[in-house]
Image (tube, rainbow over all chains, first blue to last red):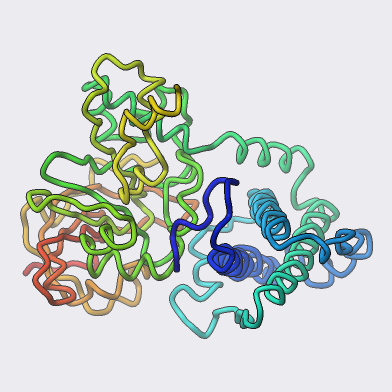
Amino acid sequence: MALNTRTEHGHMHDYEGHVEALEADLEYWRTKRLEPQLIQLHRRGVVTLYDLMRAAAGVPAPMAAAGESNSDIDTRIRALEDGLDDYIRNIGVASVEKLDYPFVIEDMRKERGDYDNFFRIAKPPHVGTLEGRVAQLEADLRAYQHLVEVLMRALLDKEVVTTEQIDRQRAFLAGRGAWNGARIVARAWVDTQFKQALLTSGREAVRELNIPPGRLGKLGVAENTTTQHNVVVCTLCSCYPHDLLGDPPWWYRDDGYKECIVRDPRGTLAERFNLHLPHGVDVRVHDSTSDVRWMVLPLRPEGTEGWTEERLARLVTIDSLVGVATALDPAVLAEGER
Amino acid sequence: MSTPTPETSPRFRVGDRVRVQLTNPTGNPRTPVYVRGKSGVVTALHGRIVNPLDHRGAYPPLYSVLFQVRELFGGASHDTLSVDLHEDWLMSY
């Protein structure tokens, strides 16, 4: 899978890559996040399939956007990418903690077949012409979105969650972002004491930056040095300090990445990410088992002496927090500011 | 939230060589298959991590264990893999 296709909304040159990434992501969020949750809710009688049917009566089925199939392929793919973001956001909102129902993430992992293929939810094949696959994605996305909306309605109807909770969850999700990671790194670059605290007790240390410590386990921080480069992966699912750092790069969940990076770390960095490390630098991969969620502390680039924290933070990318890239070259930033 | 309980006395220390059990039906299922039966060196102790949103109950103390990529997958790589493992998965080498 090409890893650099879903970039910012700039010039689109690889339709195939975009569509493939959309298909992979859409199915991931459906089979790994939304539907296992539905099954779990149903099994425990919290929101049953019958509750969903009742709720569906009050949620109109979405229609194809007018002129959808007349637009050019570029526009349609962009609309799908925006729609997918929306879908992902809504799944996050619907995943608000259910009062009085002590679900733990481990249940979901079992439910969706992380440890047993028997429980895996089937994925349909995505084949045919590019045009046909785009039309299929549009239809699927509408149906999948509809289901999230119905679930949200059912959760509210059964008073499993309140509208206040939903609003809070939406605000919480909007507030987290990779910018937190950049701020943490920039502070560590300028403040040795903070860096030591970060390396030994990360979650507590970030409170200094008004970043809430998050809710899960422990934050592991792997410091890059001139002799050691660190990379993060979660081979079993996609553990990442989401609470603190927002979402990892989209390909972090890609099975291809997970398999390659553990078998051939140095080669994978070079071939997939064009990161060529000198031979004096050891490569270490951290595979998260969810009690410790890892991030990488990249090396401070040379030529940044005297920079403010705010400016330094702009050199930190989400790729560098996972360790598949270094922090940006200061010259790149200077170029953008000109 | 993630405070290790002080009364926990870990069985292994930093620098110890340990071997990962092949199976452990009651242990954390999130132990990667590729390290089972393999040996590595303890590089960090994390204590008993309280993580109620992720799993029920408390798992035994957690360690970071360092493996050689070439010992897990063959080849001549000098790269290393650090995996976090709970004590009940580990035995003395």
